[in-house]
Length: 125
Image (tube, rainbow, N blue to C red; front, side, top):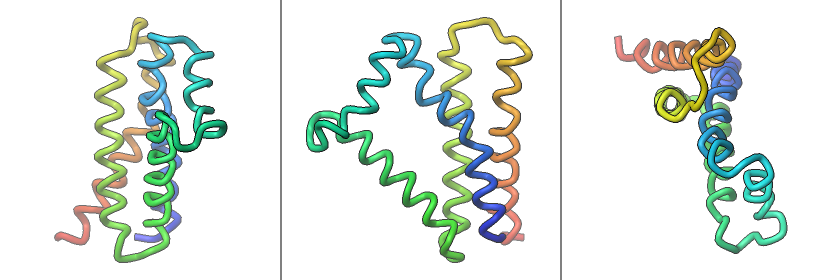
């Protein structure tokens, strides 16, 4: 397991993770409210929107695990778990009909989950 494969899995997970994080908020509140909430830590860093800062620190930790060989299996496991949870959430709350374009959103995420699961299971054999 090398760092390039780890970061490739992180990049492949981005479409489904971002869509999973934003779809419910976009459907309920609209684009402008979502943008204001995401930008809130810039003008109120210790206010009620501290979860955005914690999310950023968590992503920084997940990215940093790719540079530490002993932590990479745990990072691969986290990538697979995050991908499965985001995929299940998107399937649950997606408001429109499923078309070919919607299904294409899942292809990179499923590849990331598969590669991550393989890299976790391979050393156990």
